[in-house]
Image (cartoon, rainbow, N blue to C red; front, side):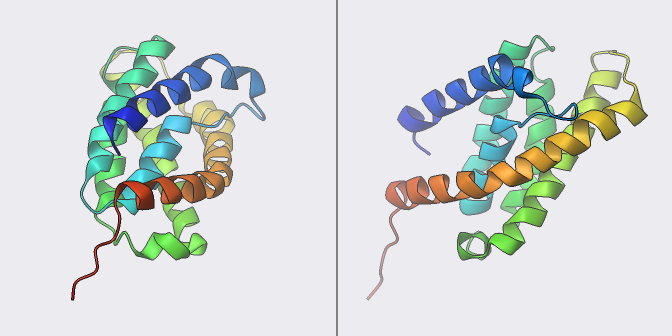
Length: 167
């Protein structure tokens, strides 16, 4: 993803995630736009750009949310790395494979985020209620929003990375 597209996209997503989406909570969960963007881009791109956007997106999330800088990036980087290890072409046309990947990635992000908050930032974490009332509804939101995000970013990815035909 080019910087001209990626930076504004991630800034707007982080601002929406920090300002508007907390008011749209359902069952304690809210969508994580940065997590969705990172997972989708990492699934589409075989060149590991998702790792860069995981770091940048995580910093934007931390900047607007008030947690110590780097917590979200540290939670997103392993998710993006694992997703980039999968075969990118599998997710282009097969939504049924993308949704379990999205659910696993979002769940992994939330668990890592809570672990990092607890042990690096020394925040008290109520594990049972955090996982039940925040993480699971948020993962459900993320999986639902993964469908339109995949379609949108797939179009952008194809425009930014045209396929080359070899003769």
